[in-house]
Amino acid sequence: MYVLLRLIAHCPDAASLKRLADTAEAALTPWQARATCPPEPRPGPPGQFELTYQLQPGVRATLDALVVATPGLWHVSGDDDDASAVWRPGEGPALVAPAVVWAELIYSANGQLG
Image: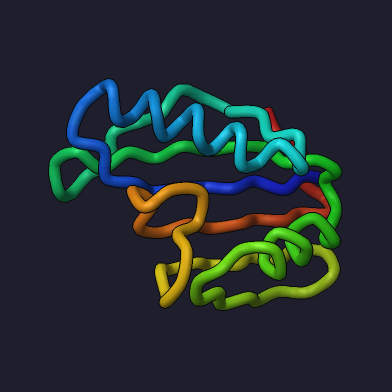
């Protein structure tokens, strides 16, 4: 079982990427976030990066709790075994930091991470 959070953010330089990673880890402390890999550049507009975190506990309730606890427009789909929640900015505070432009939570009851 696992819950992953993928963040796509606009970071024009290494310093802003480092600040975002630090801010994300602090904001995700209640879910014991652990980066699964270093931030990776995304195809598309320059300066967009993906940051991926594994959250604990790896249960569906973690996905639901994060959706309820964070602002923005969430689209949740799936069932008790596999679910996804896609976030995009709405009115109100940003998710983790203003640089985040898109996010996805992924829950799998039967999957394992590498």
